[in-house]
Length: 209
Image 1 (cartoon, one colour):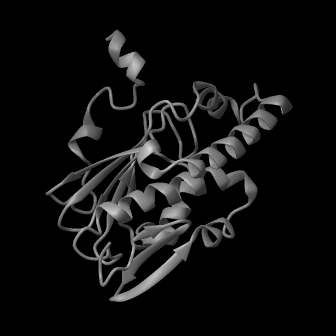
Image 2: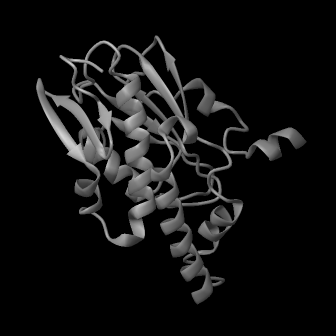
């Protein structure tokens, strides 16, 4: 709650300032920008930004003005949704960290993690590690290859529908963890945690090392 009782995130809405003007953005607006195949990226991106909105609006409503965002997720639906909310990608204040050999598309190494900095502090947001099934990551790697089958495409779409539904059916605090640091990230800067050699490894893989 901030700025005379204005809630930064509520229901399917996010409120954010842009040059002093309070904008009210809803999930339908984000969905309308994308075909159905990108709905999971739209859903998780919007919910992650709701977490950021709450965390960065403790004293006053957060603002687009100085936002800089870093993520380990390359999906276009996520990026476009974050742009819809924050305008950071359009202002070249958005950085995607990619695992070696991975392109700007969903893959098994991608991370559902975001750092959102407002020029004063930085919020680190993570989707619950067990939220997305391992099978979804494996399908991500097979798509658009010679190994892709019609059944793979059908399964991938079903996964996206189910994940999109689940992300809205539970409170934010059940699906996301959030940590606030009293230090900003500068545009172009990569958080120290993302520089680790094992950053893109799954928890189970790290335990084996």
